[in-house]
Length: 286
Image 1 (cartoon, one colour):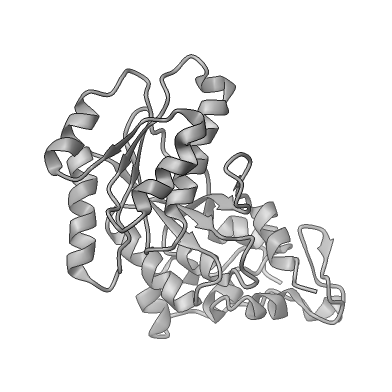
Image 2: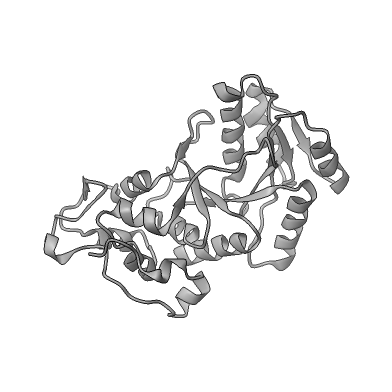
């Protein structure tokens, strides 16, 4: 078993799909024997499976399985993927993008509630939320989620409203932007999203639901990375069995920040680390 991943993890998804990969040792070490494969010191829930088997069950692309080779699964994840925090929304507006139904509105509401309840921000103004998603019921849903926390919401229906909201924010006030749902295969849809991001001068973060096809997830992650996104939040992790798509998307150059693991607004976001993700991968449905 290798101590470090192969160079395939740094290749764009498009190159990996075309076979431009350099194979390396698999995740599992035959010398360990069946039932001995572990990740982060946690034995597999099904004794006859290797870590490689588990990653295949999660639909992790084969080049990434090779790249994740290491002493433990957590080591491999730490070497291949980036884990960190979301950008500071008090300095630059933070915009959440993704497909319709990806869970970005709920993720934004959870993050806004964290600001309100955090001791670090108790003397700061409440977050300002800009709602740019104009699909039916989206504003009502966001309002209902944030109403208990008295968080102000502005409907960003025009470019002038977007610019005015940013120009008149209070010092130290976080700005969170709920972008319209998009299709990454539509240049028009992506262009409209980026116009809003640029209008408010925001940093872009992807919200990607767990359970998507890994190739589809990689397409989405790569499209967002190409447009300047550097971070992502994994949503709906409590509703999915297979989470290989999260790894495929993050491997396109996005830093994993949080996993949305509950429908609860309070405490519904879990910081993602290599250890946390390794345990999630090894916890198979019974």
